[in-house]
Image (cartoon, rainbow, N blue to C red; front, side, top):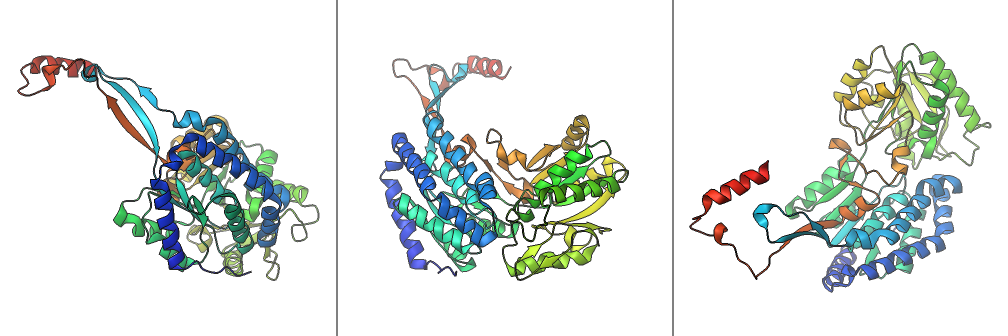
Length: 465
């Protein structure tokens, strides 16, 4: 299925419609937002099967994995927003220092306005609709741009959104990079983009003239360290799962392995054993193993197999876009597989004697989106305290994204800003400071010619203590 590019005229029309609708003030009503969230939840239930069918068509993604990693997370975000949007949007009274009395202080959370949400192909439902929950709960309008590389999913999302919301509130735009360029030409009050660092730079450059705030969820090479004290069976099981989830096409997938040299061979055997337990008949025929999204990605991944010695897996089939989970040994840090985010089921292996080697290596590269450590908890906290990443797990992979009580986001080259739960609401909101002053009293000390300056100075110094 090929997607038809939305025309510049259509994009212009939607931008103007949404600006006009936002100007009516309709979206500022919290009761109205809650109604839209309930409609969102009802629509998602109605379109659940078509969305899962489309995920199978485009990515060979099973219903179980589609629900766990895509729709289930969106249901959770919508449900919490319905329950808590009133609390999140409520005016908050804040403390007032002595120097500002008898005034009172407030924070008013108001919607940013008209927004653009751009999503990638790897989790095309979750990464488009989760930010939309934040936009709706905050009172924003949204233009959604799904990926052209999963055309069945993108067309189904378009039908779902058109069936659920008026286009002056939420609308879908389809197409390739030319459409991205046309979208980025327009002014928004927020751009929320999940994708590659290169696409993030393009969006930032285009929006710089408007000084548009942005949330960028990008990627990078997320290290996975297995220390000599790790429980190898548990480590192997959780790492195999994290790497095989979506066939490694996950922005927070463990990208490369850093194994302590004392346990390298034992870990490799544990990895092979756990892989067989997940896929007893292999991954080619399994309906629980996702395939690669397109030929160019398949060719790029296969080229990495020449960057080291294959010690597990390595088989692939182009006509079905299948690549077997692969361990790649004897890899140089300068090899292409260690320079680019892999985004596939290939695992290059490096070894270390001392954790300081790992720290130097990680800190010498771009800041990753995720960081995984297997070993003693105290050592995990130590290495986390001496490195930086968007998020991290000790003795696990991926699971930090599953807890919406903590922020999800990148840092540096892996992104900026965070979201999930109330942070999604805040991402699409402006926290406005308001000072309310009475008129029944008007203290003279703040006015010129500052005749009571000595008193003012004492008050300022007291408030600083």
